[in-house]
Amino acid sequence: MTTRIIAAVVGLLVLIPALWFGGTVAVDVIAVLALLVSVDEYARMAVPTDRLAAMGWIGAWVLVIGAGALVVGDAAALHLGVLSVVASMMFVAARPGPDLGVASDRLGRLVLGIMWLSLLIALPLLRRQPDGLSWLTLALVIPWLGDTGAYFAGRAFGKTPLHRRVSPKKTVEGMVGGLVATVAGVFVMRAMALPDLSPVTCVLLGTTLGCAGVLGDLAESLLKRSFDVKDSGWIMPGHGGLLDRIDSVLFVGPLLYVYTVYGGP
Image (tube, rainbow, N blue to C red; front, side, top):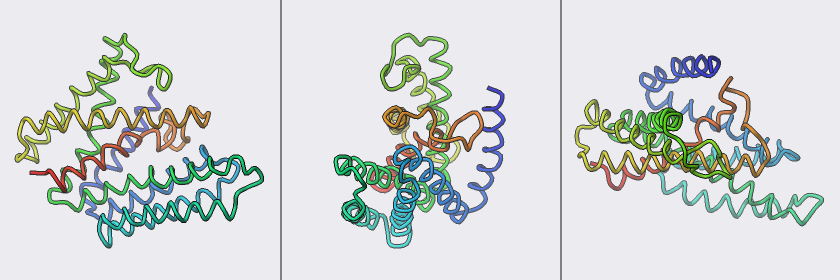
């Protein structure tokens, strides 16, 4: 536990000043670094027998999709995402490997990696929105509040398993505690920086994003069990890999970005 706390504190001392005072450039640089680490972790889990090729392919497409979204517009990400699927089919057809029976599985792992990790691009896009710093902060705070609330509520009241096969330690009571914390977090952000949010919107956003964070965590747990690994990596002492820390953010960030574009105040 001490190692986890120290690693978290050090990370926050570096991350928060960079995000708050570094502008869009700092967010872009941090996002690119996070993507590169995440691509490496995913390739090690999903395609260990051909890791370098998978890492190069997935990483290149994620960066291309991200560059398209930031330079041209978010619609470009959709078009490039579709193109990446077609290109991945060609890539696997050209390099099917010795066992043709698993070629479709390999294709699925490559496409999944591109689509899943590209979700992180939502954070630089959020930063470019009106009140972007506040929205970006909310996207990062919601998963942390959800985890913290779920941890303490689960320890105090947890009895009912949430999804025993995928994540045995999670409980329904813990999830409820996490949702209470995320709703409270949105109200705090409303008081501090987002006054146009209505109370009803705060409740809906906190609940929806809180549930998205839980699903993001469960999705990564499912992948790790499918790939038969305990942690996605080792880069964060006491926490495992980077993907173990940002799995919720990968679901929360895009949903919040969609809200700011189509439903924001």
